[in-house]
Amino acid sequence: MRQARIKIAAEAGEAVYHCMSRSVNGERLFDDQAKEILRRQFWQVAEYCGVDILTYAVLSNHFHVLVKVPQKAPVSDAELLRRYEVLYPHPTRYETARLEVIKRELAADGPEAKNWRRRQLALMGDISPFMKLVKLRFSIWYNQAHRRFGTLWAERFKSVLLEPRSWVIATVAAYIDLNSVRAGLAEDPKDYRFCGYAEAVAGSAAARQNLASVIGASKWDPAQAAYRLMLFGTAAETHENRAAITPEVLESVVAAGGRLPLATVLRCRLRYFSDGAVLGSRVFVEEQLVAYRLQTGRRERNGTRLLPSITDWGELAALRGVRRAFG
Image (cartoon, rainbow, N blue to C red; front, side, top):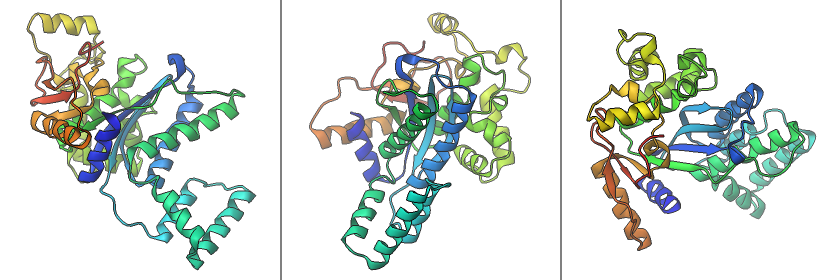
């Protein structure tokens, strides 16, 4: 139901998505240079498309990105040109000449100008064009840099629609920023430079502003303290307790009816966060399911289900069951 769900969310106004894409065959293709290029392209394409990157994580064979798509609003020709130039910060002679032609067409407001506006606006204010453009531009760079051809990505990107509430978005943001810890690449995500949290800690104004909004704060200092507690739990936790826990350990806790702190659970891979279709309160998930059924006339086989009671999720629920809750 992904395409239908995206249309429903767009019609309703602002929407937040957790998106993920994996390299072909899951091959570990992305070295530090590739990760840096992809990191830069996230911000570049987001500015062009008019969406906000709340946080992200780039690893050697996949990436996660948390994106807020604002409610659509009119875009002036001047803003369209500014965004277009963002995609080409170092234009070639052809690109420079092309831009001059576009400016003349817009000034004349002829048929070509209308067609150009329509093409640009079709790529803005929607999660699908944003993700497609990121993956396309990165694929072109990667294949040229490594003298290869063919597909770079394993599949169409996955997306999970999130309820636009701070506690839902912050939980998923922390899960994304902890990717490096789960992968054993860092003991602290601030030391893994290819994630939103590390970029914010390093001083990026955009990363700080967007991550602060995840916590519902306007300033970075109080937001980062609250967010770091989500990442690591209480400050009294020992160094060993910050390590990633295995799916087997987590399943054994669940089987025994035990519960773990949220910060501990988020350091294990949870498929509800990547393989679900909608994530939020039970009411929000059920509203999306009803809207999907009304729009398409189809019935989703799997209904709303609460996440397993391994921690205090705040009644967090998901649409579309997964084969295993973790692994």
